[in-house]
Image 1 (cartoon, each protein chain N blue to C red):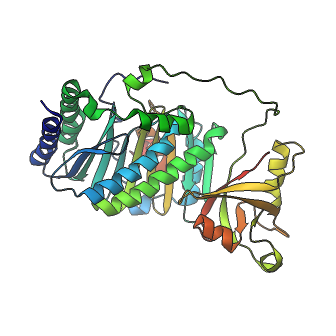
Image 2: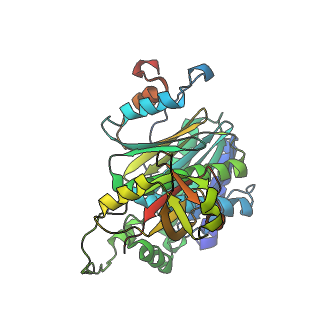
Length: 270
Length: 137
């Protein structure tokens, strides 16, 4: 059985899912490296590409908890589920009226069984290029990455952690703060590269890092994921409860954020 | 790192929870309920956010930022998929990870992300969350 025939078999299986359960509107299978392996005949490629990109971004964040196994997005009309099958991910969208037991039987039993058979016949079809794994492992040191059994069992030489002469410092204390515009005199005379946070926040960082002066912070916009590093100063005459950060227009623009949004702020310790 | 031999992952049994509009707790009630839930066994932490602010409480403070980003990314992903596949308004999200499960629930204008160990009784926690009373679900 050739690779093309195997893909055809998977595609037929996906189309059959829709025949068995007409409430299923979309099904497709993609690899860890985001390449699409198979899709049903109705779902268009642009939709799949965007969905896969969205899932990949979430997958990267999921490394903190050992990697994603499955994700279910439940809306008032339909439910989208992405389930991991070793190196592959199966995405299914079905209306809320669909019988959950039937869908689970199809997506968690039938499809994985077909995939297992295909893996036996054409193992390279579902494998991920080693360059991709090397790239991903390089990005985070290999910790918590979703990998298949073969990858986990392969010999990975881990280098000894570098010994530095720097004293041990606690991990940077991250504060989630609400964006405010810079007002008053600071707006007119202040630098466009300097953000302002409450004195209480700065002193909390100060307590954590001893006598080190906090001159810079890293600000990450929680929705866009954009990060900037800039100088920090305390808010003058602050009456806030320490939950806000004043950002100049230039920084707001760099972060693609605005007043009222949430950002993560971390002191830069050097 | 945990080795996974099976191609088919175990799934969390679905918990059906139906909250009437008048029974939806306000932000203050939610916060109080979450505070209590955070002491339950197997609860790693929670994030409660509305349109302007967020309350974050985690057992392991070193992972706070990363969990916050995971939650934020999940809500962002739900908005994109909602548009791509006409899912309708987001009701809840379940992110099953190798180490934990993240349950995100929309309660009125508030969004709650609960980070739980995999064997936690979700029904009990959700009942406590929305009603402050385990017996109502």
